[in-house]
Amino acid sequence: MTFDTGTQSEVLFAGPPAAYTTGGTSTASAFALTAGATTNFQQPVIRGLLLQPGRNNQLITLEGWVQLTGQASATTFTISVGLNTTPGGTSLTATLLTFPAITVTNYSNGSIYFRTSTINRGSGYGTSSVATNLETSGLYLGQLSSGSATVSPGVVNMTQLATIDYSVNQWVTILGQFNTNSGTNAATLNQVILRGEN
Image 1 (cartoon, rainbow, N blue to C red):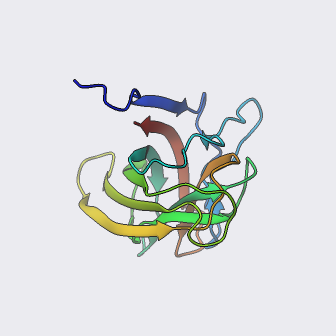
Image 2: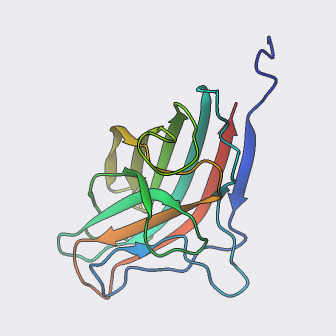
């Protein structure tokens, strides 16, 4: 180990203390998987100035585990990961990555695991392009609780976000969306781990 940069990998957030509020029931609209509830208002955040100007080798990784129930007829579920300058947001002010629609037909307490890797290719203040240049890729997999069906693991190509301000807090917001309106559909974000890598 050279300790060339004088920095190390660090867990920035691991939680929440209890599962986030279940959403997605009887709606085909996007909903916040990171929505808080009584006694549980913790949300991962990339604090202001964590990303540093003059450096281009910083990496932020995010892992999440979603518990899912899907209706018996054809339905899909989409996860979007992004940032918001205020905590508890129900929408994204900036999108890091949107995963492809995952088929969750007839899921019963199934699981989706996802991971994103965000490379900082330069930090600057303000929101004009390219102030802070973040590029994010991802992977995902899923399985029914019974193990009788799986989602083929997938990799999402890198996408660019170039219009955020590195100097302010950026709250990590995760959205879910079913493509159908059903009282059976439900999604709960049970675990989030946010790391600062170098």
